[in-house]
Image (cartoon, rainbow, N blue to C red; front, top):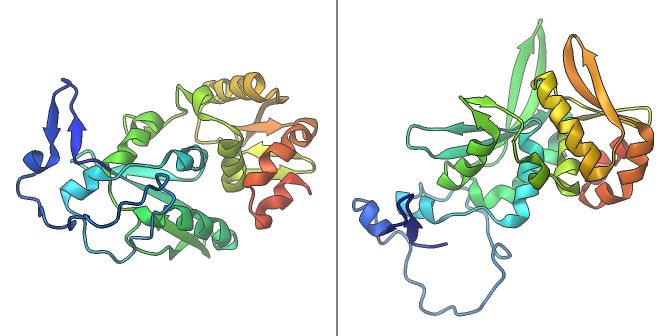
Length: 251
């Protein structure tokens, strides 16, 4: 955390000056603990903590070890909401059958959350479907992801996907929104255009040497990864997979 921010014009402005009405005593001075720890190794849950001040919200950053997970979820079922102040919060929802995945993600993000995951229900053609959803507090640090994954309030494939994606990113993508078919895999990319799916495939080919193509389902594009390619990368994905999701890797 830091109490200073760098503006676009390169001038440095103290957060205390930027938010003069914010409670300066919200965080008590820490003059006793001097232990050096690895950043994010000791982050605790903030569930049920009081509402944070503007100063505290701007001091919070996203740990680098969470970025691949967040990217893999955002390109699939997770989404972001941004408010008029330019602060953003993260949402992730799955069917109740995949509650273990949501709870696992929550445990990694509980430092950024004010409440526990909650049950949702949706009525579709007279049938009620139950899900489980989590959301974080609203933070400026999540706006970095909003600017990458959204354009004109619509989710897009990031232009820097090649730099973002790694095996952990791909593992969370598959766990969240991958469908096993035989020994092959579908990535459910119906919300993206054929052009965007072609862009994704070019990256999967060049970065992971995967054999994949586009299949249309109800005239919407999905990405099909051939069985041989899934077998090729299975061992690289497995360290990031939850036991309840390993069935998607056909183990």
